[in-house]
Length: 113
Length: 113
Image 1 (tube, chains in turn green, yellow):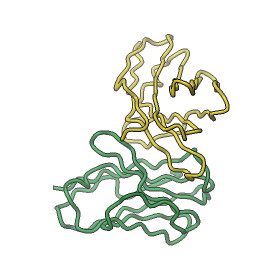
Image 2 (cartoon, each protein chain N blue to C red):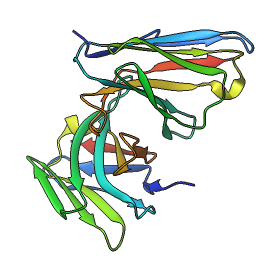
Image 3 (cartoon, rainbow over the protein chains, first blue to last red):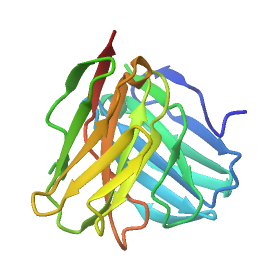
Image 4 (cartoon, each protein chain N blue to C red):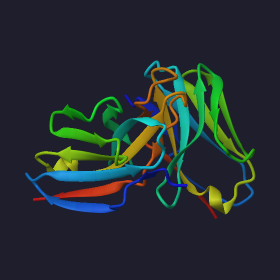
């Protein structure tokens, strides 16, 4: 039973489209994250939610909108996709807000054509 | 601005020998450091961590050393095993920034028979 699961794992779409990536964790953790790994392999934090409340919002374009319906789910919606959005997006969770040992999902590879 | 650097993109070590992976950081506010291991098509998994109040932390075959004056940490794996072949990411965080981890670009370790 996967602890942090993301869907879809692969996504290929055209520029200008809107897409969503879903994430669910069954660890009972309070805090969830979205990280982006770009073509240069940098893993950078995008957002963090603690008990459905946004606590970290890095410099991310407004086209990216996270939504946390409950503390076990954190979805990422991306509007008007651009070529530069192509990356692997990792969802992660930690037991509490100050936890540094993150549990990552398998990643969702987004390719924008 | 790359605050965490892993200057060796790859490393090849024979089975049974020691693997040494290096990481440098520039931000003096970092006070907690972690190593994550990543297999292909999987998310990173937490391996070992060290607080800035220590200079060494050991867990089985894995030891992390921290040299604060040099802003350098290293991960030693002894003895190396083929299953250790993976990409290793160094990460750092600062107190007060929640769980915002800053990652290096990773070092690919290949353990050969």
